[in-house]
Length: 426
Image (cartoon, rainbow, N blue to C red; front, side):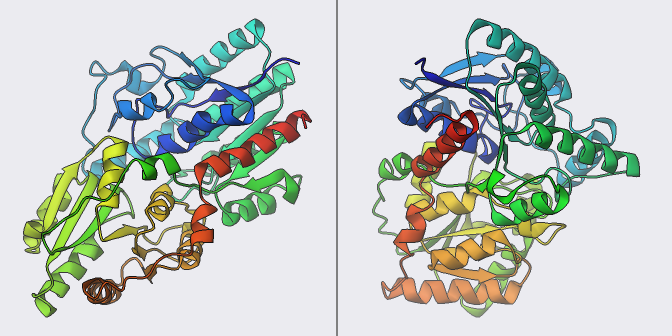
């Protein structure tokens, strides 16, 4: 019997950085442990907000083959293929709305067509047992579905976020809304299995697409890589400060402003608390200026974007971690990857999120202070409570069984089983 192989469509892939890259990259890293050789179709050099060679280095020595396209999408056409600055929020929103208006389903359509052509070439050269694609971008799902339809190779599609009804997407006309629904339906009719990051997305898909059976839509959550955690040993800090860290970027309803207001309030009420706030990722100048106006910038260390391994080390060196997602349409379906990487550190968490999947998982974790995303008073009170427990050495530990359920090696085994069920290989 030939070695099992999977053809993976992945626009977001190292050396691109940021959280959207990591789910597929970690799956690919661990799939060979379960008998699958991944062949990855991804893009060549592109301009992007962050690059991280260390994520690509994690695949060194693994049984992985990477095939790169050249120059089809809009980011690849920019002269500078390096890191570009994220624009101010109002500019980013304007550009997003313009993109959603003129590109359906998204502005990666040109790349997805090129990826489809490369896929057609690869399937002529060797045998693949399954095709795997994760969205967004959703144009890539359409390309993978087309290849599956043409070849009969089973298709597994993975939802990191909603497609139709996505909380950040703009539908300027009824035609746009209808077209997205039609494209999504076309993909799901081809797919053998569907994986999603949380139950809310599963319920949404089954409710919208009556041909989907519950057992065909499988929940495989985001997670943490145990190797990342094992290689990041806590560093002793004799400074006596309570270090609270955020890792990631801010955009749309993911904003630090309520947190900044809470810190200003806390500083007024409890100037004795030695706060040490760290931001790892992209803290744009507009937010730095906001912190300056509120008189809290002296408490903040902005590390900028770091290699993923360095970011994990900073999480490990912290006393507690903070994350937020604001109130928005279909907020209950959001499954922010950073929460689950936080789980791997087993640190106490301040989680400012609306009702939904993230809040439920934070509750299960156990060592969490959970607030509504804009509740300044609750955020302030939670930090004071965390500090008082930290001072006494009494911060809570999480539920270890819950943490282990988000181990990426285990989650990859779940994905490999879905591949096997799609191909009827047992």
